[in-house]
Image (cartoon, rainbow, N blue to C red; front, top):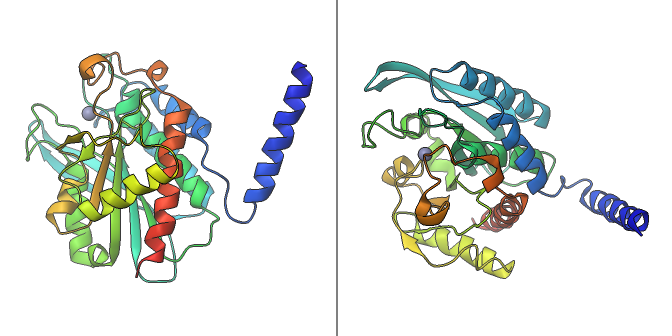
Length: 295
Ligand SMILES: [Zn+2]
């Protein structure tokens, strides 16, 4: 019975692979979780650590294998601890329309003792790596940017000056080089790996984009993961919102009882599930298709 089940599973897997041939593979939550595990195995990854240097190399290697053009936006951030070198990593898959869609998230982890950031910093990294691999060989109309932000976390107490270093830098750079004007939408993911996934209906985000994403989730049967729990969250979408971009933050800010795993040593791999990555990946693939249909 076990071997028959295995045979059926293998057949279904190969049929899925066949069906997806030529249009990229389906988003794999298991693969996103595996990428996350590799990042977390490097230990704490705050700016200035040897681990974040190793993680950048891993991100670059994986993106190069996906065939996107990889550029780095490196700068010196003025932090309360003095200047710190930071690097946003940008993967661009070219389209034909001249317009662009960006999917973003952060890869740094908060500098704290014994904090490995499986969900906070890890899940966005793993998600974006699998998302890039998924869309790599799909035909597309718009440019798709996959952006790994550095320096999301505050060095001390969160403030406008001490947070969002990477996204503030890229928003300014993309304002001056004209990229912002080509963006149809920017969707940021953060802490999306929680087993008990309940995303915030984030009220600073662009309403039209939030409606599009929530409607796509409902159509796919994911309304319990995309409920209407309104909250306002400061995150990497804000520098783009402030620059007039149609941007959205997708974050689960209820991580453990009363968010008690957030920014604690409890933020570990056992709190995550492949299914949560699958839900977000499936919704965002559909959303990209709908955005490409817009002028
Ligand atoms: Zn954090």
